[in-house]
Image (cartoon, rainbow, N blue to C red; front, side):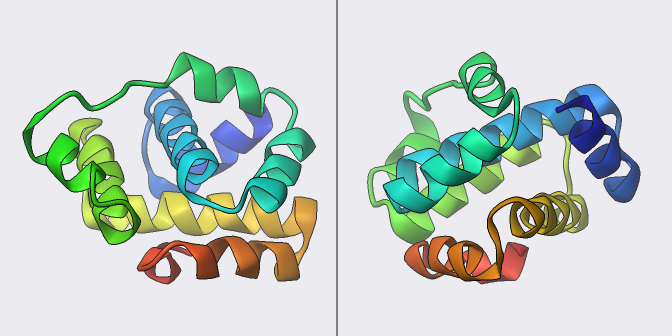
Length: 128
């Protein structure tokens, strides 16, 4: 997992601790919003992913993130963007983290399964 964190941190120009939190948030979001089979396969294929999700899991309990999260889909994606913004990431950094993480996903589970994950979450294509 550390190799993936370092790879994403370098690509996005952010520190590894922030990259680790962002990866955990994104994988947690995918686990909640994406297709169980494909996301489960992805998480299993990345050693330490389950622990990273658990370590970075925070439920939004209110505010705009909580309100938008109730709507799922694009709202869920907006809540994720808010969480990443809270980590100090700008839109460009969010896109870079997403693109790199999905590149890792392609390497682990293949283009077809990644496509199925992306197709299941409205708006996700702009980040992969």
